Amino acid sequence: MNEQQFQRHVEKIGLKITTKHLEQFSIYYATLIEWNKKMNLTGITEKEEVYEKHFYDSLSASLAIHFQDVKRICDIGAGAGFPSIPLAICFPHLHITIVDSLKKRITFLEHLISKLKLDHVELFHDRAETFGRKREMRESFDVVTARAVAKLSVLSELCLPLVKKNGIFLVMKGPKVSKEIAEAERALSILGGIVTKRVETELPIEKSERNILVIEKTKQTPKRYPRKPGMPNKEPL
Image 1 (cartoon, rainbow, N blue to C red):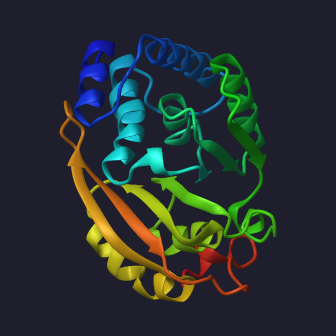
Image 2 (image 1 turned 135 degrees about the vertical axis):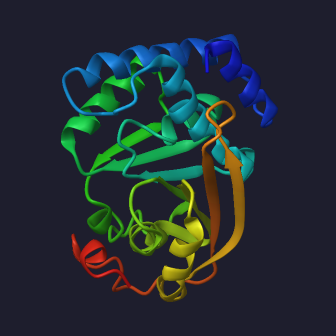
Image 3 (image 1 turned 180 degrees about the vertical axis):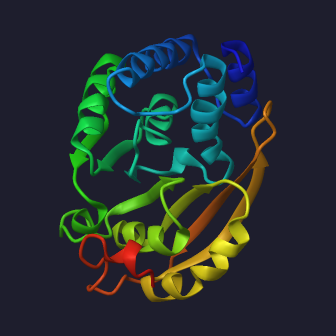
């Protein structure tokens, strides 16, 4: 997917891509590749693949919810900034909080948001399990998102404690998500979430399957969740 194809396909899903946006994505790509030589940020480095599998894929989240109606977003385990940084570029009204447990990735993201001049992005070097127990953060976000981080049963415990009541936990997955939904049924029930929407889509050129889940927070998460670091992954609910 070259830059012209990227612009065309993003506009097909209802987003306006300006010249400034294209310049920012170009800076993003160059910075990602430069830093990827020093640390493992992504195994995808070809420009056309990055634009499709990272940039376009991140923006496809807008197929599931209207980001114009959202104010505060938290991205758990953002890695090299997906999906949060592409969303920050295209939706400058959003206040975005990024949480990642690896300090080197946070250092990269600090450099990136400075180069992109994104003053509405906040970074935290923390584990989701401890971040979700902070009083000022807990149940304070309109949307909490995660992209291909862990199984849904695990992700639910890491993310739902941060979603405010009536907010949304937005999960971006590849194929075979039905099994994960079934396995996460108990966790979602305990933590206060219910799957209300599933958007099945595909990358426009590669044609690989993608699934976007909208999980609404219908009740408060019990105070004992998330459990201590490592427990959600070791013993999923």
